[in-house]
Length: 313
Image 1 (tube, helix red, strand yellow):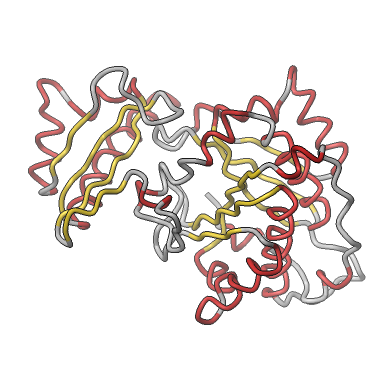
Image 2 (spheres, one colour):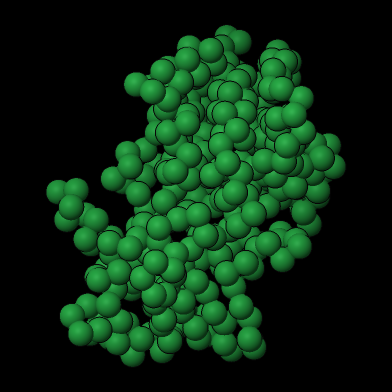
C-alpha cells in the first residue's frame, strides 16, 4: 500500500493561498456533540505534527480545542507503514485541528509552486466497517452527493479487504485541501449521527491497543484493553473475526499451542458470543513480555491473513 507521505504533494505557499474553509452546516445539537476522526500519516510526516518536544501538537490542541493523539514510532495501521492520528472534540474542533495538521503536512514538503494551481493530495480516514453504510447511502446516493458537493474523490476500501478482522476500512479522499476539508466535514457530520460510530469513541483504541499504540493517552482511554501487571508481564486483547478463530486454534488446539510455545506468551480466546465491544470479533488475550506479545500477535495475524488471501484469490 502506498505511503501516506508520498500522497502529499504541495507547495509551501499552499496554505496561505487557500480560501477560508466553507461554513459548517450541522445542526447546533450535532455541532456540540463530541465526536472523533482517525486518519493515517507517514512515520516521517508524524514528526512534523508532533514538533520539537511536542510543541506543534500542543499548539494545534490549544488553537483547535480538540484532543490530538498519535500512535508511537513504528506502531502502524495494519497492512501499512503509516501511523494513526486520532482527533476528538466537537465537530468544529475536530475540523479545525484536521485543517491545521493537513496544512502543516502540505507546507513541510516545500514543493515549488505551479502557476497557482492547488495540489491534489490524498488523505486516508479510518472508518469502522459498521459505519461505512451511512457514508455510502442507499444505492451509493450519499457518497455520490458528497463527491459532487466537495469536488473531492472519495473511495472506500472493499469490505472483503479488511485488515485481519479488525473491522476498519480506509476512506481515501483525493483533492485540494479545501476539497478534502469539505468532504471531511460532510463525512464527519454524517458519521456523528451514527450511534455505532459514536459508541466506538468510548473505546477508540480497541485495535490501537492491539499495537500498544497511542503515546498521548489521557483518562486511561488508551489502555482500555491493556492490563499492565508488572514490567515484564503485560496483557493485550486483540479482536479476531469469529469465523477466523478456528485458524488461530488449529486442529485440536495445535496452532495456538505452537504460537504460545514459540513466542513464550500465554494466549486465551473468549467463549463463543463473548465479543469485543461493538464488534463480532472474539477476544484473544495475549499475556507476557512485550516481545512475546508482539511475536504471538504477529503469528496470529499471519494465520488470519493467509486465510484472507486465499479467500480473495
